[in-house]
Length: 148
Image (cartoon, rainbow, N blue to C red):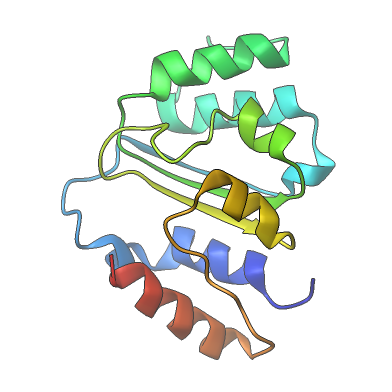
């Protein structure tokens, strides 16, 4: 920890939409799921569904129900999802996060201390953040995100 992964991910999500200018159409929805390792999975599922669909009428009460709901409702949408602080495959499975979980042009950014989770997921890119200041880290991740 302590390399600024969360800070860089938040900056990308909030301040730097131009990073995704290769995809000029707007995303159908976006979600920043903070500190996933510290939250109940069903709560994180509800946050994701609300953030993308903007409907308070959708509430899941069980993890398996939430996973199916995410697949069904978000599976064809172009989304930007940042999943912060992942420390288990179970968390990614609960959020239905796989390489092709969402519609074409979707971007899923995962921050984790465990590179192995990204290898299991067969992530397109893995960006290692060496110890650096915030500006350096943001420039590095921006360059890599633009190289798609």
